[in-house]
Amino acid sequence: MSADHPLGRRILLASGMALVASAAVPFARAEDLPASDPRMGPRVIGSPDAKVIVDEWFSLTCSHCAHFAQEIFPRIRKNLIDTGKIRYRFHDFPLDQVALLAAMVSRSLPAERYEPFVTDLLDHQDEWAFAQNIDPVAELKKRAALFGVSAAEFDRINADNALRESIINRQDRDGAFLQIKGTPYFRINDVPAPDVVGSYDDFAKAVAKAS
Image (cartoon, rainbow, N blue to C red; front, side, top):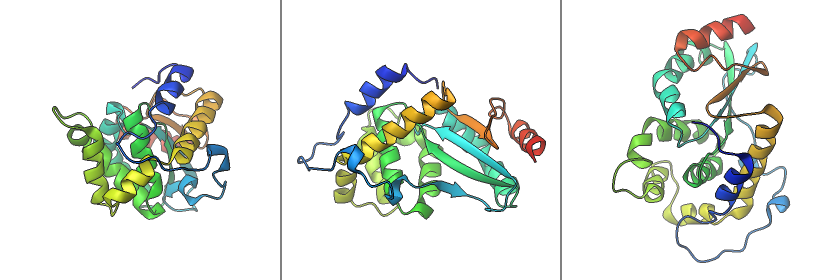
């Protein structure tokens, strides 16, 4: 899925505010969110001793990201991550308001639940994000409940505009600095890897080359 023009996309994301009707809750400005806030910390799986570091920027409502997660990532997890060959870092790059809220929820979970929740959302994207006659926010709320997020906590996360702005600001910095044009976007040992999304074999070859 291609990213929209950065300014237009930012206005679209920021204008969303709370996507679920709830009472106004005062929150700190984005710049007041502590740098040490664990919600904005790294989300990483794999051995810290791995020689190869893979970074993925993704949107939870991107169909290409879902295809990668469903068809390719399981083999990466089994053959490359669980065997200690690569360390895998996740970066939120939401392309619409629903993806942004989903990123906020995933960031609000304990760090060890981040990857399972993200994987669940991508694996079931057609069910909660794009099924006919459904409210994607309500469906996201249901899936979050499976990971321990109460309805009240979900609403508090949705109303947290400091967290919302922090994710958008980081996305803006990454997008501008790395010239990210769409998702999923990959770097292997900090080198762009545009050809790894087609198949597991392509991904494995790129990792072997970087080893």
